[in-house]
Length: 142
Image (cartoon, rainbow, N blue to C red; front, top):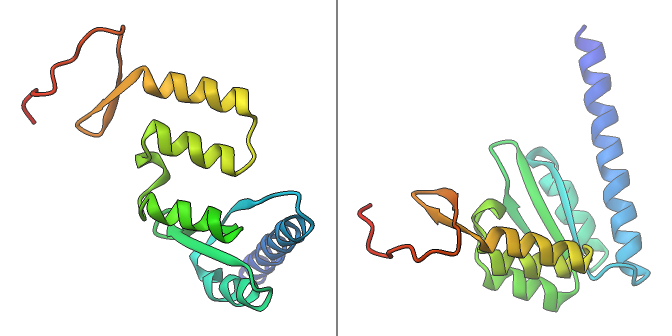
């Protein structure tokens, strides 16, 4: 059973790095300006070494205890991302989420729909509440 687990892990690592190399290829060919690659934190060193070897700008954010989000691509895109801060993607404002989606090359109309949906919700106490376009007092007790 241990051998099977080691084989599965090896297969995952190999597959993850193949996807990363393909993303790097797409960036180098100009198909994308910014890429988001999610991986295990155990591969962070290998990933950063590869990106540095290829002279590709990157920014890494912790996604969970065992996962990382690796953003890489054009230096200006990475600079914009860094200005947004090192926070969880779920904590992005609707505007930050929209900007990131556009930079990642997501469909513009779908990003507009996503922005409008997120903007119609108000985040209080870490939870989003849907608004019916009514005024919500900003001085609600915390």
